[in-house]
Image 1: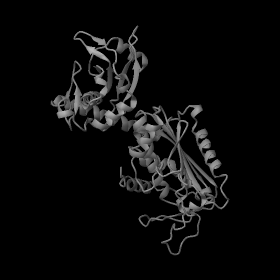
Image 2: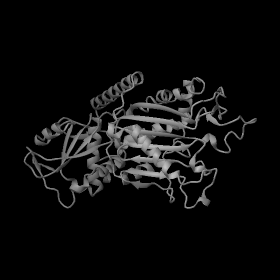
Image 3: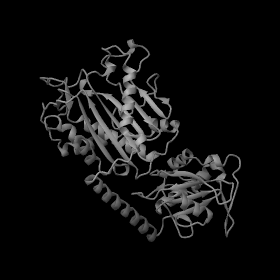
Image 4: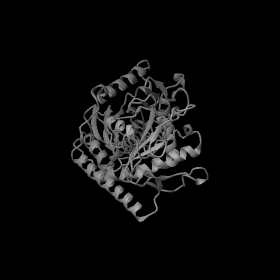
Length: 449
């Protein structure tokens, strides 16, 4: 909602289908107050979205400002509202918090904006104390006059289902348009994805510059990188971003992208407004295992940008060891890029779900280094694929642009669009769409978080 519209609403407060007004709820100190707020969020989300104005007393014919007391104002932060949503609301929705004043007033009020473009009903994951004001596993909706109540009547459910169906239809149509006509990148010049990618790569090059030429951490045989940027990112604190990385990002393999380790010195560290991790770091060279391929280097910015560098798994000593006769390397596996890009796009989707708007756009930049003379091989016995096509370029590049809310609906098509030009560099090899579909589904079936 525009600043102008919020200013109008706060100066002309009245509750309705999309506006709820609350007092300071005792600074959300008790579960009763938190569940009260959660009920309003759920009802607004199921009724097309809306806004909750905090810090007003209902005196019947008008709402009167109330000055916050004892830290009540500080309770209404982006993180605290997110915690309420994560505890009581399912599926969780990305609410935003802004701060506004009425005309000629000195009192600042938090305004919670609740999105309403959901594709499934939003319901209460947990109830309040004694299930009094919020009942678990219940769906709440708004009624004329501003009341938030459980959906009970046929009319309640018909309106809700009609809204959900329309949301799905609009999202599907938009997704189809974006597949046919990919959106232009909207990353601002000062946040250019190219510059971000080069900056992060150079930082890694600086780190390995002092290593001996024979050190495996230099990835001399080859490596791949991926950079992404998400539009309109909410810029969380690094502490919040770190917690989400450690605990709330879905995992689809034993070594996912942006792997989060806790042992020093491989644990992530703060670098300005970015989090950095070099998983190959060791306290002494003697501790480094020369065949260790888990040497990722990654950076994540609270501005919605990410960078990951990873050695080529195909260069492991044991790769294709169960094949006889073993093909002559170096290799480029048919299925590994599909697995990895599935993980990357689901990572982007999850990160944006926590810190960006559903309609935010994203851009992604993929690079493979050291691909000259690599040959396509098939390490999976599940698929029959031609092998031996060779690449004659030392670096391969691909780009992808899209909308984060459509990643789940167009995942296979997006990965096919991203990787098809990569495989073509192996002597015009055609990437089978059915292979992409199968590998993506195999990857998603392994979700463990």
